[in-house]
Length: 326
Ligand code: PMP
Image (cartoon, rainbow, N blue to C red; front, side):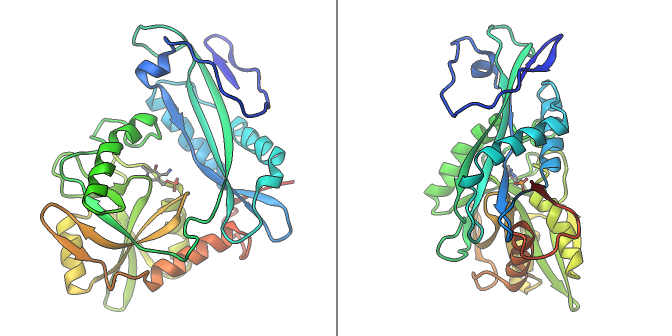
C-alpha cells in the first residue's frame, strides 16, 4: 500500500515476492525513516490459521509511525494486509508444534531527495517467512552480557519505536557480547547504566519468590524500551495462573543480590521470535553469575507452555487474542 501527501493511502496490491528498485537518493537510505513489526500465524488444531494479537502490532506500528513523523496506517488496513498474505501463503503455515509463519510488516520513505524533513511518499509492505521453533533441540538457556559501554536508547529518543536505527545501534554491542562468550546483550538505562531495560530483541522478566508468593517482575516502560506484546500478554497470563506481577525499575545490583540470596530464582526473556527463553548466565565487566541452577525454571517453563498453548490453539483463548482467518 502506498501513501502520498494529499492523497493518503492508495494502490493496495498483492504481488509475488520480488526485489524493489531503489533510487540512490531515496530518503530512507539517508535518513532512516523506517519502521517495522513482527508477528506470527499459527496453524490451529482444526487446520485453520490464526495470528496472535495483530491489533496490538497494528497499534504499536501507529505509535512507531508517530515517533518517526510518518503517516499512521489504519489498524484495519494493517490487519487486512496481514490476513491477505497469510491466506495467500496458507500452505506455508506449518502444522507442527510451535512452528509458524512469521510476518514482517514494514514501512519506509520512498521519496527521492536530499533535504532532511519527513518524506511525502511512503510504502507499506508485508512479507512472510516460515519460522521453525526457536529451540529445535529443547529449550536452552542463553547467556547474557550487561552492556556498560553502549546504550540502545536514551530518554526522549526512539526506544519505544520499532525502527531500524535502534537495531543498527545494537549491532556493535551484540558483537561485544559475542566476544565475551555471551549469546545476547542486555541493555541498561542510558543515564546511570544501573537499571535493566531489555535484550536485543526481547523483554526481560525476573521470577521473585518471597514468603511463599511467586511474582514475575519486568522493567517498567520508561520510554526507552520496546513495549513488547509478549511482555504484555505474560502480565495477563501470569495473573490467570495465580502469580503476582510487577512492573518496576530493577538494578543489576538487585538482580545479583537477589540471585545470591535465593529470592530471584529464575530470569527469562520474551518476544515473538522465541516466545520465552530462559536466561542461564550473566556476565558484566564487574561480575558474573549463574541464574538459579542455570537450567530452565518451573515458572519459566509453565508460562512458556501456557502462552504457546493459546497460540497453537491447544488451550482456550479467554482474552480473544487469536485472530482466526476463515
Ligand atoms: N524488545 C525489542 C528490542 C524487540 O525487537 C522485540 C521484538 N519485537 C521485543 C522487545 C519483544 O516484543 P514482542 O513481544 O512484541 O515481539
